Image 1: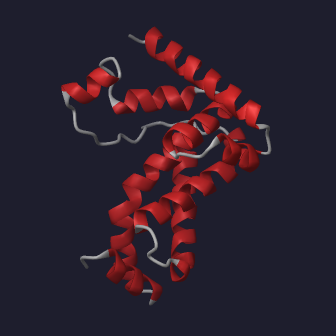
Image 2: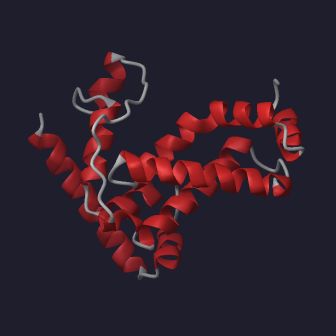
Image 3: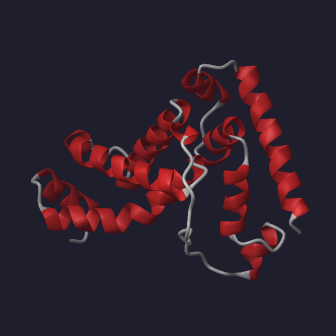
Length: 179
């Protein structure tokens, strides 16, 4: 199964092998989105599972006007935002063995973050208070405008800008404290 178009057609026909292939192809990328919006791996795994259920039930509506990855990323981002704003993150899970992400360990990449690995940076982002982490992810990572953030979170544009500013300050403080 080479192309996303073939995969989508087979998944729409409920082909289990194609569904598995689609999951395996995009699970780690979508998990990255889920991890950015949650404070623990268990919540991220819940969103990942629910996100793929949503993807498989809505594949017929996918029009190939964007890439499949872009379309799926939007689904996972919106699902994660909705879960966080509805209070899913109020339930605490204890991670016994945190999942590790893969990355290329290049000195150029690590120098961007003061010698920190992507996992360490993500860890600091995940430690931010929810109201700041949410806006930081929406704006800096997923490219939402302050107007879009304000509408989605039912806050003012000024609050969105303020929370982003505070998130950046807190993140810098956390990174400096660990270097």
